[in-house]
Image 1 (cartoon, rainbow, N blue to C red):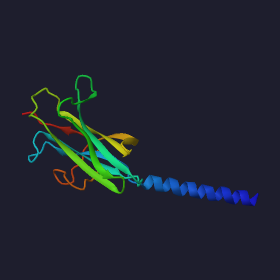
Image 2: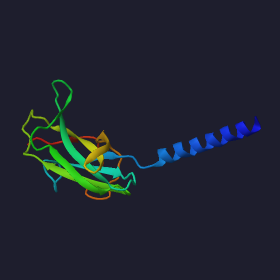
Image 3: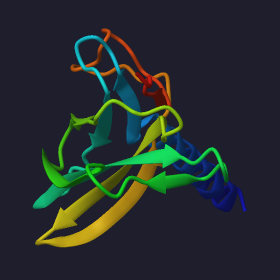
Image 4: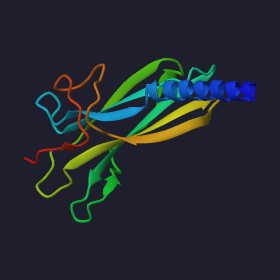
Length: 163
């Protein structure tokens, strides 16, 4: 009986340690790191961070999409033209990788869609097959390693100014 209790206690410790380390692992994220600035007028920049899973032969890919919010129905819609990067290879599945894309648009007209956000699709692939995939929408509070304007900028959405 004492031996069974010791085994159960040891198993509980192992489970707690593995849960704790899983919670501490870096998670994928996406942020708006450029939004209609003097240096990048009429543009939205989306940055993403993706942790590797450390599996041999695995490669990481991301896809950036821009969405606009329709004031009439309050829903988010994919921009059909000029709002999709296609899949971009990020690298081998080791360490944490960051990458980003800037999408430029013509100056918005009054009454046109102006509130934008990003959706990033993350994929881990082995031999051309997706072994894990998930999506994240842009959120504030992420520090980019590079590319933000102004430095350190991070937001969930971007409002382009109409001329």
